[in-house]
Image (cartoon, rainbow over all chains, first blue to last red; front, side, top):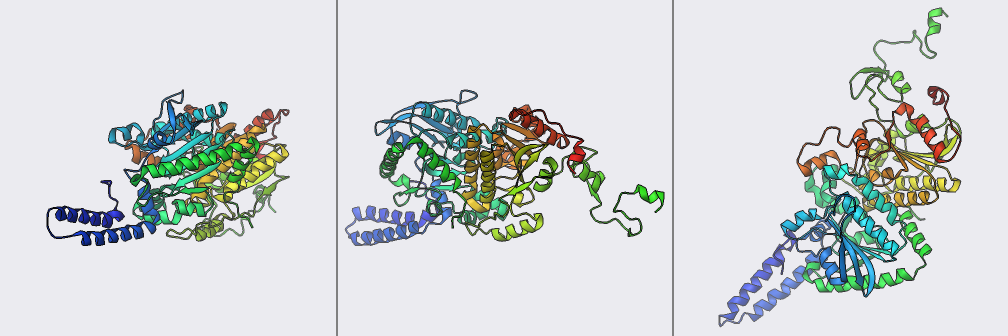
Length: 318
Length: 295
């Protein structure tokens, strides 16, 4: 069990602690506590079932940002083989908030690109908390164009609070870096599968998010602006983030309902960090299955489908 | 009529003049605070004759300031926003739309007109900052794409004048996706070798800046326009230092190599015509006196 407990998980954690306590007592006393433990276990099960069945969009946002939540690096490690990381945008820096490289998926060469937030403090700083500067997007672009050149499908993992809002980032044209990726990805002549694994934060997420098939993990979020940002602009207070998350509909279930993604990968109750192998298995299967289908499609049809998918967004069909 | 009255412009009658100053006759420059004669300001395309400050133009004022007066046809004028999310903050999105329409007399934040620019056929799109901060929702994206489609159909250039705070939060992820939608359409335009000139005006930020606005074959900015991805306040809070002077202004962008040129508003029409004629392999076009051409 993870040591990070979110606010809404507190009642579950308390019950679990109590059960553990009873177990310890039960071990060295003659009183039989098995019945009581079993009763509490059932109660705990019911409680966590009801809590996780009714998560609010804001609670899901917290899960998507959970400190123990698996990151791109872990998924790459577990889903692919022979990952060779490639670095640098060839102009300015490596921009480690985005990582990418060539790997094999089920034996087939693919280009993998994803935001990486970093786990420990030092690594978080190195990764800039997953907030890419322009070089990150330009590195991603370089790798995606390479993928096109060598006919490798592209797999992206989205997990970022957003593009980095800094002086240097603006000086090196953050806007153009994002825009260019959208422009190029819309017409890259290889299949592209994108998966939101945690936070899909605005333009910084979309910059590696244009593809033929878009998936979200069950407890991931995707939004035009962070709930806090939206709340502070429209509600004039960042404290209203929960309302903003609800109003924008940031969670996977809602986004699927709105027709903006293709599939949700179910997570174990409590989130991906509770059972990484299970999520890896499901994600891997979904990637393999969809890549096979996309690879079968003639290229002009694939590109036309990708284009029409975008053109249909926000248009009412009678 | 006395000789003196003949000197006065038509329509101004000394007889009916009431006490006090009629509303809207005089105005103050937002920058230098100079008191300006409204007619004079309009004649200068809303540029302060004293300090050259470029006041914001509405989408229609903008388009009329560059397009030839005849042969104009508006595209997708009736498209209205859909409240996909039934969005409500302190106010309902629907109500915000209604009041934006009332204030601007427009249906949405983008106006698209197919017309001519000193004879050259073009499609011109222009953002209306007064309509919910020129924010890009589904209708703005769709109108922009229809503008691109017309360019593709008729093989004519596209010009876009941006003035926007970014994506429209009230349409959630639909808005974000308009960035991809408009950029994809521009990729098609590029494949056909059709020019796209992007004119950045004050302000061009966020999702609009990080999509269509930065994808021009040629990018022009008006003087001192605020242009960038993240807002200055957000950056200040993140980096916790004072932003350099002139940060995210047109001149800063020119210096850093993000835009091709800065153009005074009075020269914009001629500049666009000159560039387009060359990009489309036409003979040189010159305007008569620009004032007359824009009446």
